[in-house]
Each structure stands twice: as C-alpha cells, then as structure tokens.
Length: 165
Image 1: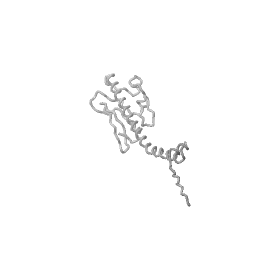
Image 2: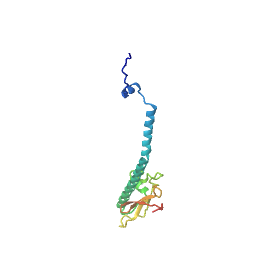
Image 3: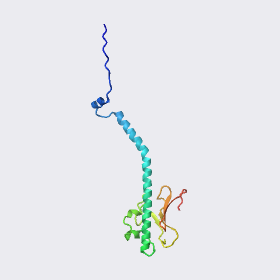
Image 4: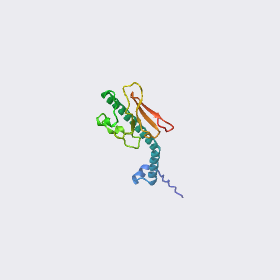
C-alpha cells in the first residue's frame, strides 16, 4: 500500500528573510543609486535656473538700493549728484560694498570698480525721466540690462540682437 504524505507548503516570508540577512543586496543598491541619479538629472537644470533668477533679482535689488542712495545724496547736497559711486561708499551712504557687485557678472564689483555704469551728470531735480544708472554690457547672459531712471523707476530691457541699449 502506498502511503501518501501531505506535501509541505513553502511560504515566502519577507520578514524572515530580512531577519536572516541584515544588509542590502547589490541589486538593491544599484536600484537606489539609479533612482538618485535620475532624480539629480531631472532637478539640476531647475536648480541652476532658479539660482540664475535669484541672482537677477539680487541685481535688481542692488540697483534699487543704489538708486535710493543716489536720490538721498542728491537731496542732501541740493540736487547735486556724486561725481562717482565711490563717494556713496566713502561718505557712508551705503554700508555694504557688495551692493556694487552684480552677481551675474564674472567680475567682483567694488565701490571703485562697480559692475554698473553711472552718469555723474544726472540731475535729480528735473522732471525728465532720464537713464542714470545701468548694468555694464555683458553682466547678464541674455544680453539684457537693468536701467535706473532719474525718477527711481527700474526697467529690465532685453536686447535680442546683443547690441547695447
């Protein structure tokens, strides 16, 4: 007579597997590394663009600070504009020299060599809205310039041909 014995059922228990093997397998490590690489490849361009936009906003902020300081200087000196921007730094109108630096340029701007062009013949008492202060050409990668006018307005001008404005 033939005796039939019940077959043993094998049940896969992942917790029992993890208790036996405490480390990761090579395949698990490769999958994690590939996922991290894919995420990095997707995020790096967005991070670079965000950083560039933040620097452009900082450049506009620097121009606004210098514009307010120029108007304050002109009010204090009966409408006369300073002969150069270093006067604002030397007389204490500006407390941080980093204001003279456009973060998008490759040059470190200082009070004596700012990253901006200033017209010392500006007259803040006249009602005409004339450009007083603007970026040096080449500060921005997209050939744009920020222009400060005598009434305090700031305009971001984009030139598609690359010519100076």
